Amino acid sequence: MLVDDHPVFRNGLKTLITSDPDFEVVAETDNTSEAFGLYESLKPDICVVDVTLKDSSGLDLVKTIRDRHSDAKILVLSMHSEDFYAERALKAGAKGYVMKEQASEDIINALRAIAKDQIYLSQRMMNRLFSKTYGQKKDLSLSPIDSLTDRELEVLQMISDGKSVKEIAFALGLSHKTVETHRSHIMHKLGIGTSNELLQFAIHWKIDHQAKNA
Image (tube, rainbow, N blue to C red):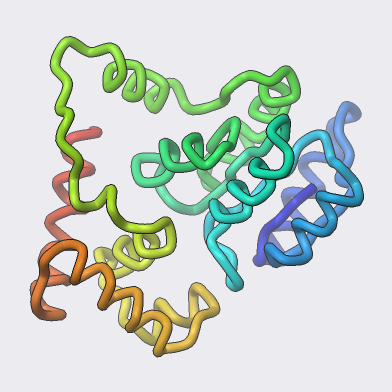
């Protein structure tokens, strides 16, 4: 089952998947409320979910499905960098994470791995998580970023890309007021006082995160 609110991409993904004789797409939708109902009725072997959906975060859908179906096999597919979302996807209950720019190369391999109940991430991401878990030096302190919800993290990442409130609202299918509320929550959780300070923090956070994971 495919859950993605970009019809052109979803159609291309369906074509890619159905070109392999081992797979077929039994359902597709662009929103989380319909997706959960379809999952309940069809029980697909694998569900492919985008992070950014207009009515909710795709990771919220992953959590909802896994809460009701602990054996659900879910692949998160997104335009967002794995550096920001792969670990969150696994914590939500997904079995794998693939960035959309790599989908044509990796999607079938990811589906095969998840069908066997295996975890699928890029080798770089697997190495990073292994090092984080088993490395000799561990930083046990939590970053303020960890306190953000998945949707708030999406908003912060878009702020780091220089997007305005209007652009973020359009991209996520949210109202201007809702995005402003997310920004307010982010600022409160991060101890930031002004919009300009939030923008500077977002840019520095993105640069620092990319440098650490280069």
